[in-house]
Image (tube, rainbow, N blue to C red; front, side):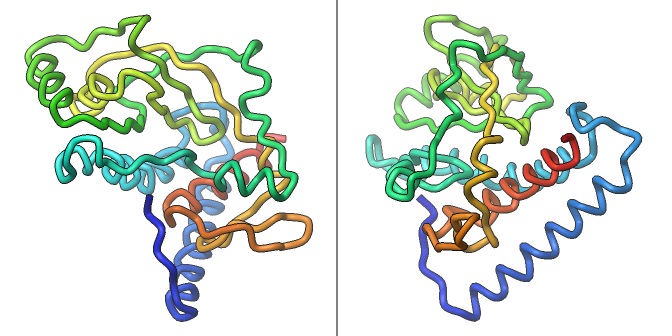
Length: 226
């Protein structure tokens, strides 16, 4: 969705920004050892929000700028496309234990949540109705996941009403925990590309700088909670 080839100078600039971001994230964690990283109020999650809000906006903007059914879709967030993982024998186990996942409550008033509305007509209807009413969870319509270790929500069904909940910052809904932990044994990023960790083989460009930073902050969180 955000793919754009870069020259060497651009890559180096991004590498420097990425290194600075990692240094800041490490300092935030090291300065707050008295707060558990399991606590969503830990300052590192506010740092994640700096980058997550940018992604959130990019996912929502096409509903205002693109004609119906022509809105770009994304198949993955924070990791390479599935076909790239498959070609390189990297297991995507984040969905394999779905029968044993736990549930959390997403709160639009404080959690960062992503949604990808695809129909301007439906979005207009949703934002016109829900802006005047309380946001209500409907079991048959709404489905979401809570991505760990970043503590970011992702709407998987009910995109239009979910988007309005995000914009109004009102409403709660249950979400299944989706743990990305297994991927850290296999891949890493420098802000420009994803690499296979054991060989440093270049896998693909990242979709966005912000996703790369969040992914590697997640590694810091995991390493400090082991």
